[in-house]
Image 1 (cartoon, one colour):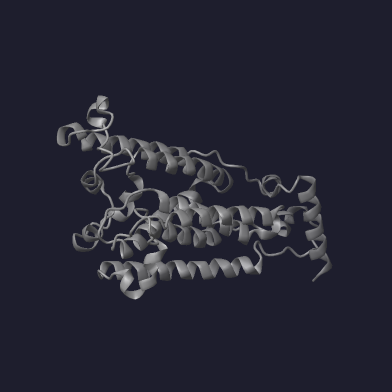
Image 2 (tube, one colour):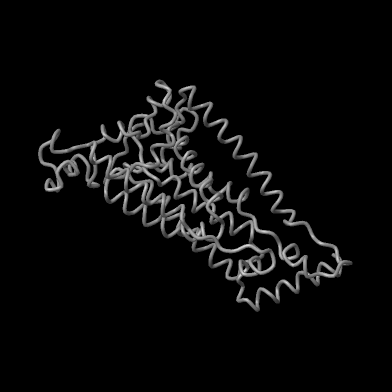
Length: 323
C-alpha cells in the first residue's frame, strides 16, 4: 500500500470522527451533493390510499351483500368479517381491480397484473400496516438515496415478488405492497454491507436489520400470507442495493483536497465492483428464468417440493391451503 493511500484513509477516518461518523455530511461537503427531500414515498402512500377508496367504491357492499360492516359508510362499507376479516372488499372486486391471479396472467395475457397488484390492499388493516412500514422505511431511504433509485427498487422489488408469488400461489388472488416493502428492507441490508467500512455501530445496525427481516419473514409462514411475494421482493431489493446504492470511498471524496502528486483512488473499492457485477448478473438471470417459467405455465412446487414450507407451515392450529 502506498503512503499516499494511508494518508488518505487516516484523514478520512479523522474527518468521520470529527463529524460523528456522518458519512453523508462528508459527501455533502466534498462532492457537492445534498440530502433529497422525500416526495415519492408520500405520493406512493396517497396513491395506495386513493386506490383502496376506489376499490371500496367499486365493491359497493350494500348493493351485493347483506350484513356489511360499517354500513353507514354507504357503498364504502366493508364486506362481512367472515368473508374479509381485514375490513375490506370482496375477493371478486380485488380480482376485478387487478389482483394477481396466475390464470389471468398466464392464460389471458394479463401480465400487467404483476404490477397492478402491488397497489391494491385486502383491507384497512392490511393497508395501514403496509403504509406505516412504507413511511418508516421509505422516507429515510429516499432522503439518503434519492427518488430515482428508491423508485426503481420499489417497482422492481414489487414486480419480483409478484413473479415468485405467481410461480407458487396459483389458486388464489394476491394483493399488497409487501413485496416492494421487503425490497426496501433488502436494499437497506445490502447498502449496509456494500458500504460497510464507512459506518459506525455497523454490527448493531446489521443485527437490528437481520432481526427485523427474519421476524417479518417468519410471520409469513402463517396461513393466508403470501410469503413468496415477501421473499421475491426481498431478494430483488437485496441485489438491487448492491447495484444502485454503493457509496464512493473516502479517498475519492477527498480527491479535490489532495496534493497533485498523490494518486487518486478509484471511486469504489474492488469488492463493491465485484458485488455490483455479481448482483446484476443474478438479477438478469433470476428475472429471465422466473418469467420464462411463469409464462410457460410451470408450477414452482413441481421443481421445489419443500418450498411450500416457505409460505405456510402446517400445525395443529391450522392447515395450509394447497396451491
